[in-house]
Amino acid sequence: MSEWTDSIVGDRMTVDREFNDRVTASEFSNQEWGLIMTATELDIENADNPETARLIADTENLSQIMPELDTVQSQMSQMGGSPRDTGGGSGGGVVESIKGVLGLGSNDNGSDEERLEAAERLAQAYADELQSHLEAAGKWKQVRVAYQE
Image 1 (cartoon, rainbow, N blue to C red):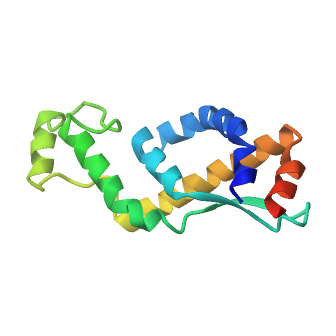
Image 2 (cartoon, rainbow, N blue to C red; image 1 turned 60 degrees about the vertical axis):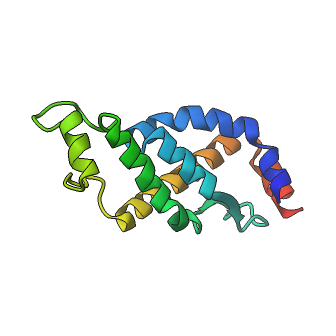
């Protein structure tokens, strides 16, 4: 099935650029998003039916990378704060980094379950955006046919 995904590499690059604003507005850094998409496989549900065919993000493997997402977040915090930090307030930067290393910092990213659900939603939003792009470019039928082969 990798042949059908190979045929949309250029489309994915276009959607990646367009989707970057959504990633930036999310709770995930670009590095975390890269890991999420590495663990996510794209699949087509009901590929044989043009009316109900839908590009879906198969996020079954995401739970396996959650510890790595935590590691990325921790490393970013240790380097002076995450990209989500505003830099304001009395506890930013070095102090928060030290507190994080000591395990005293607050985890404002929510539980792993909440982050997993957020990653799943964002991955599906990406799949929806990619399908819309393929439909607008007149390639959706061709992709569905290639998927079935």
